[in-house]
Image (cartoon, rainbow, N blue to C red; front, side, top):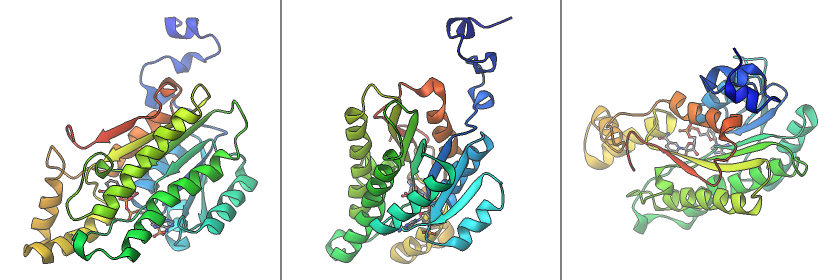
Length: 276
Ligand code: NDP
């Protein structure tokens, strides 16, 4: 029997009935671009988008890392691109659009996290963090949006952090850059309001990726503890005291790409095992 939902919306196939959205997701024919797609959260999102049928451009500085992820699916396409470099972003996004068409799903994920006491933070560290996390998101989103026509369907997702909604001790530049990414999607959601493109941020707590793995020895040294203790210390930063896994972030990103999420706009989705 046809569901009421499909009857009310006859343009949608019966498979789009609102039960088990993950199974009905079909992004075939859509071009997605994920920065920092060579590992961690970006790779997990890219792989899930490809499983849903999208052709996914994955970008990063290390072509080797991108290539090894791209080998896992014929729908993943590596493009070398440094998000902190305007020319590189312009050339990379243009090459991706030339090969696979306008970018309908843009995931600004590339980022770095360098900790340290504010008093000893150099201007170089500050600028590098802003250039990668914030300028990188600005340049990527602007270049991707430019490929869409008025009325085209689109999803822009910025991977911010819980540091986008509250201060993180020992990480002031990171905190500022991640707050900025939320401002970016909020501003864009207002500027494009009423259209078919939504702009949202995902704000994860501590996720088990290289960023966290590389922080553990630094924290261990600074706080005079073992690396295992340092990892447990980081996990305590999540409300459920458990490190998140990348599939939890990818699931949220996929949900934002669903047709049923079309009115979720200008939001900041926190994933941290509880309230941040
Ligand atoms: P990873 O270190 O695994 O991924 C970071 C990615 O960003 C890498 O693929 C890296 O690729 C890319 N990158 C870094 N600098 C640049 C650059 N200048 N140009 C292009 N790509 C760049 O860590 P995560 O997967 O954890 O991080 C992904 C995002 O998630 C980041 O924005 C991070 O801030 C955010 N996040 C992570 C959390 C965590 O606990 N792990 C928590 C909250 C947010 P390459 O080096 O090849 O360029």
